[in-house]
Length: 325
Image (cartoon, rainbow, N blue to C red; front, side, top):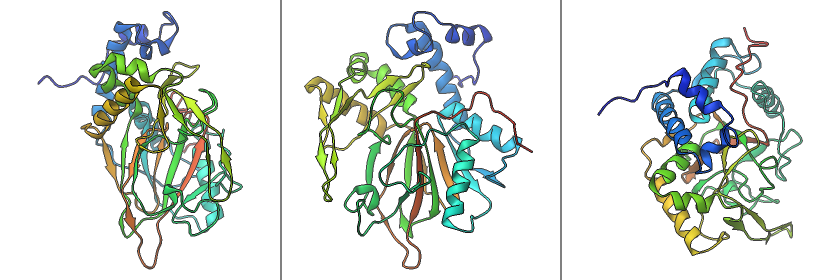
């Protein structure tokens, strides 16, 4: 098999960027086969080059060096995600929050989601919750979590949904708690190659509905309706998805079948990244697909991950060096 070329010509790149019939987002609308062909070739080449990248060591999360920033930016440009490993440990929970906010801010992430379980810094602690409003929700248990993108139940249009996040490990589980990660753009590519009509169904603005719900504390969440795949104002592809079977309604039987086909492609993709985050390691991403295995806590140290979600995407294009060493 001929190896994949990790670059396309300048002329081809210029053609992708040219605003022809709706701008860059035309690639994902099923209306421009040539633009899609060029994007597909570039995307697979980039993913092949990025798939074996190890977590980038970060000496000081408050002051990234030029090399550190470029390494993370390149991974995000290629695969919508980057793995990192802090070389230093914050001395307290509050300082860890401050470090996470400074670290993400250096990549342009400032539109912090106002999540109901977040602390005053916008940080949500992903841990086993024995009481309070988090109790009973799967992320705050030791159970496995199926494939999803974050905030799929809280979509209010392309500009008011979860577009990026950081998931940082403060303490790892004694056993289990591994994550699988998959670029949402690759999921779109696999489905479009397999079944264009299924892709069209999942682009529909009413493809997936999360019914209204009331939790144990009586808090109400309204019905949430939206697409699975959608394109933002800048032409970037985003995804709103959950593989769970309960509390999900599909627009019709054909859309349900399309979702089942998508799940099969996600589950079997050879480019899935697998990682068990160690303390100090994390994922910075544009809300890619991910899941989690069940876990068992160490008797002396309970698993704790810290998450911040954002309404804007990661700024990787400029690769600004302001403040870098």
